[in-house]
Length: 295
Length: 262
Image (cartoon, rainbow over all chains, first blue to last red; front, top):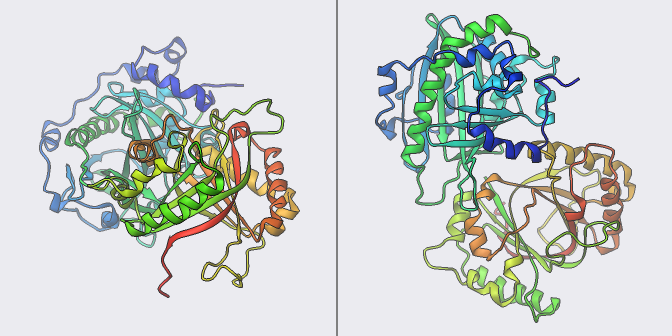
């Protein structure tokens, strides 16, 4: 029997739906009846002004982390830039963000990243102002719902087909999630207390109004978490213009081309906003639905 | 990481296949050697024979059902490919295409290679092929059109399942296939404005996968026929539009490939 979690479009059916999702329509009667629909209507908390202001101007590119240095994220302490964005010398975009979640655990993170791609509404409640929808392929859905796979591994190899606005208009973004090993982390160091969990992969983004001249832009996404006395610490890195090719980061920008600053800053601001919301609602929604996939 | 540009073209009006192939090998190939830019290797595959679609199709569903060569130009990375395709001064090679190719019908795939193990690879003894090891003299290029209902990420999985099944159901192929390479379309190909401009393409079909199969000689090409029929009848999920797929039997001509240093 079909449930909201198992509703499946073919690729040909799914793609045209993204234009409607980009319009962020009101919830359907079926969606309104979902037990977590109330989160959609909540007032969305605003970011800490001091934190948001750190995304106002670019940081010093000389202090930024390149994806080839990702294992520095496993060092104790902090890197030169933990909150900020800039263009790297090769034109790629760099974003760093850090936020601490009191009362949140690595198990909650693992559950959330597996739970939310199963239906549009789960993704929309995360950040209603800018999240349009999400979909999985049949094989991706099968893996996400496979109870024999540990929650922390459910997303490995799965592609999230996301429709969202990262402050530059609605885009269709395919995010291929990787295991930390396939992402390029040194697994001999990938353990407590340096890391508690990880969600990351390679994305390709293109406007929902794609035409023949539209640019499909690659980016590497890294969300790495570690325990601190204040709560779970979330450190984000994005490298725009990079793709992961056979496990190796490669800048995929034509010579002389840089990722537009507006795109880098837009994603940086979006990241602060959506994870400010995340901080406030993850413990509550986990208390209601945590550990379960079918609701 | 290496990236490869695969361009399947056909001859321009007025040329025979032999004239076309002679031109691209001895004239166009020479130009490429003279102005190499950042090309890592350049291989031409001259078409001997091939088939488009299925026997059950009443008519061809491809816009153009003829190919005379597939060139494979490899680069160390994406940036070097772009530097070569878009030099400050237009390259002689880019101006030469109109003299031999029906450019508007070119099919381009920017691909990343994946080696697929075969049960009976060629031994290192490879008479007549010099330093090139592990390949036969007969090369089949199989362009497989993804079924439009199938997600690209599932397509990879379904093709591999169908391939493994076909290998088991095609014993002659299992015995004779010497090397198999899957060439997966890279999403960077979505921004193929430069490639379309370089190769003068108009509304080209999009292929997510080109599989290369090597056999010892033309004598063994029937093994591929056995394999492809087994694949088209595989029991797994539908993943391909076989009516829009095609394969080419080719002879490989190396234009640029450096001798390994070791």
